[in-house]
Image (cartoon, one colour):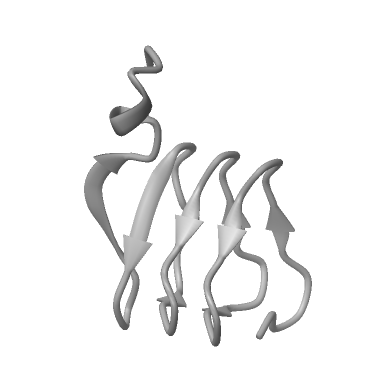
Length: 68
């Protein structure tokens, strides 16, 4: 669910029933977990889960060996 105007970065993934508040900017290459409620802008390449959504501290490319 996307409320109002939001910007979703390139190659980002939104899980099932994720919610974005009005005016949220999701950085590129982000993963927003299922059911997460995003109330603040996200950083690129982050993984966010929970209500309210919080970063896990993991980079989505860590398991692929892609440099930051």
